[in-house]
Amino acid sequence: MLIKVKKGWELPESAAMDEGAYRNRRDILRQLSLAGFLAGTTLATGIGGRMARAAETDPSADLYPVPANSLYQVPERPLTAESDATTYNNFYEFGSHKRIYEDAQALKIRPWDVVIDGMVESPMTLDIDTLLRKVQLEERVYRHRCVERWAMTVPWSGFPMSQLVDIAKPLSGAKYVKMQTLADEETMPNLSASWYPWPYTEGVTMAEATNDLTFLVTGLYGKPVPKQNGAPLRLALPWKYGFKSVKSIVRFTFTDERPVSYWEELQASEYGFWANVNPDVPHPRWSQAEEQLLTSGDVVPTQIYNGYGEFVAHLYDGMQAEFGDRLFR
Ligand SMILES: Nc1nc2c(c(=O)[nH]1)N[C@H]1C(S)=C(S)[C@@H](COP(=O)(O)O)O[C@H]1N2
Ligand SMILES: [Mo]
Image (cartoon, rainbow, N blue to C red; front, top):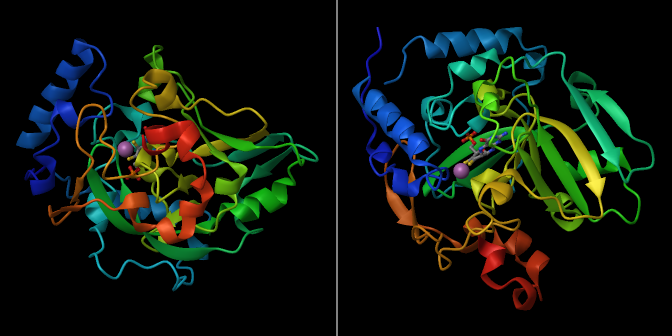
């Protein structure tokens, strides 16, 4: 029996705040009818059990929980409820709405190969379980700020991306890392929507990739990361809008050309390469001054670099003249 109660923080999720809403009317109507459906029905009580079973069968389950890194904690905000962070998601491969968690269970996360190629000493393919045992896992609590204005605070497990860069041994000419999500038509229903530029792609500069905040996520709430949150390997870039934090990564390509990301290709004027959080630079269709926390529904001021300026502001020194507000969108 599904009992659906609309959460307070779902209310402002109108088409006007949706990353995908600039799209065509048909898409918007589809989203609205889904929103209506969701308003009437909520959380499946069975999902906890199903996800617990999924975690049991994950061959990396024995690695968790991992030690917490005391440098990365968020004492001023309550943790988002696990049941919200794992049932209110953006994962367009499974649908352009928030309730993809059931459909996302179709994602096959083993075997899972991670390709490292491009400008590296020697390209390689690593099985995820081999990779997991080559790196040092830790837990970090990060704020996450979606460009749509919702935000969460969750304990990710994973490892700094710099460890992957060390494994990759990039050539000195490499300037960027391009990352790609799996594109599997058999399990991802939205891949048949061919107007989207699949695979979902994102990129960072080498300086961003090796910044200590840049975290490759393998777990969430002390367990393997659920499929809907980007199993078995996703990125967390807490100072950038959430769309930069690409899920279910199968490929890291080191390159000297700036990658064009999924959202940039769809709508470059709204979603750029840098996408650093800044309350003073509005999205073209809405203000970014505030954000609404999942679970509590509280609306709080958004912070420059999502509060992580001490770690990352220096990465953008001297770039304002060239990029202006595009550093923040
Ligand atoms: N492959 C892929 N990665 C993705 C997305 C997506 O649609 N596909 N959505 C992004 C957006 S817009 C956000 S806000 C975060 C959401 O992560 P969460 O569902 O774990 O909260 O994932 C990002 N990574
Ligand atoms: Mo997002």
